[in-house]
Length: 389
Image (tube, rainbow, N blue to C red; front, top):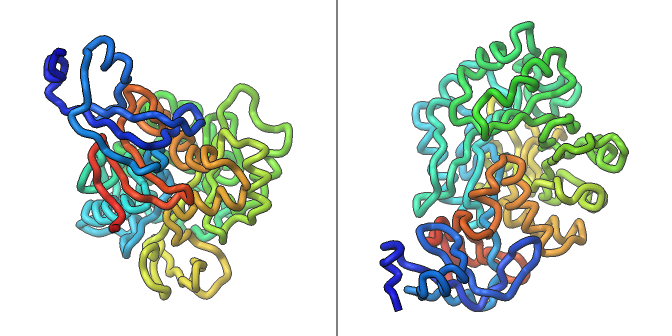
């Protein structure tokens, strides 16, 4: 039998005694990994006559693609929208801590802020691969300031912006640049917004425009789902034909009524993207915290704009959102897991690498028990976190 090293110097790992989420079904089969990617066992057996160098006993666990959080404002005392000289340190802390929640990739999110904040923060956040140091950074999500005052939620109205006559130049003036930006949330109803959205394909290929409060005719997301308008849209005949429409849901048990979750899932399950919308207070005791330029008061599981009853972000981690979504929507395990992995990868256009366990995909994995509690997290086939026995 030829040595595995006749093909690659990398060892081959075989995950056994598991149920693998593949093609929207949990299948009882082994999972093979080499060079940080999912390996096709038939090619290994018949073409290479290869074998496993190590076996990982999953003890009956579910293996799903690692979770992808495309809207996370911070956590563990870190607020991505706070300008400082060490933003990258805060991003690194959050990326390490969210491994315990099954998140293997994320988009650090900045809420509506003055231009000076973007100019200082954005150059410090870089796209980077995940690993033992933490979850991978897929790029920044810029939520605002080009959003409607009528649908601003907790965004500070004094920093909201409208488009002038220069389109993308207005955008660039506010942000200072779009390097390492994966996603921009803006209001399609704003005058001049189409002058930004229409030329978007000329921007870097992975970047995606997103709409707030309703879906546009492009691939998009609506990450602010306390607005009941999205449920009405999904159950209407106004969804754009022939277009992929994605919408974000904060399934923390606070933002979205369980009935709305059920209706949205049944109306358009393929587009539902679970997001945490987590703020700096995630993982910390109740009290006063920040979200960009505003003070947030944590009361129990609620995050309020201080002095109001306006919800402002969440403190729920992704695995909690997955469990609540499955319970509230009454959906299958597979559907709940897809909403936190496959769908966000589709939204960002990265399914060739992330969000699936297809052969050749990155071996970013989360091991879960039947109640969808995270048991271990792997990035590129390497264990990066495991729950203590």
